[in-house]
Image 1 (tube, helix red, strand yellow):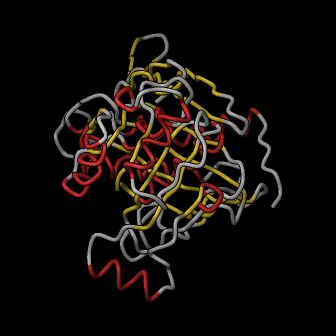
Image 2 (cartoon, helix red, strand yellow):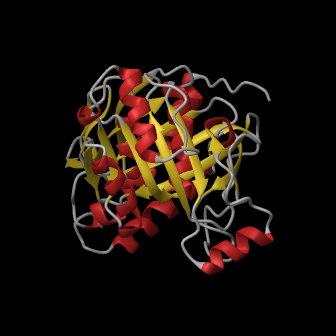
Length: 325
């Protein structure tokens, strides 16, 4: 599989896609309608892709074509030129947060060489295990209690010092119970799966591990960043309905298979994130401010966005830009 190398101009051209999505949400932030937030971001992102000089295919997007009018799985985006790439996108991760003007809402996307990103098909949920590269051989193949004891031994720390992030959902109670059973600390979060995963994947973070069942699209998207940061990740498809399970079986998915990081993201890629609302400590201590819109008689109306780009090898770049709107 060919290596994906992007020039600075191309990186900024692609970053404009997540910036456009974030800017488009501003009339709806705090309005209480998460569907309006999402619709604005999707439309802006699809439009912004039109001028990006790539041949992109959406591997993970808003759903399948009969469910999503734009950015559906299989949708072709960009000008069609090389490089040919796979794209995993979440126009807004944290639509509820944006609708209620709460911190942690982001526009986010990953790009990797064509054929390298895992397609979860009709399955919307993924069991995930994410940590930094400070430990090794952590796996979903063994009970979580055993994983935590192994992690503590590898870090040479007492198990009761471990902090494990778990999304606050009924389906994840079994993970919280397992963490507490060995004396480790549960750090719950309601929304913001991607941002929490980034924290778990970094050396020296306040989160040692993220575990539980969350969105499959977000899992694939996050895998690109985890790979770049040198972290660890495994996943396993976790259908939440009989219909999902049946569709997955009909399409040949093995629901017992543990997906390694190399299965989720088989080649190095790039990760792009723009804050919609404020995001704290997203990576390496970087705090991102919300999208701001300014108007004056000299410059007209301009947007100010703050973003992060993570490149292969773990290079993390903070980008603050103003654009006419």
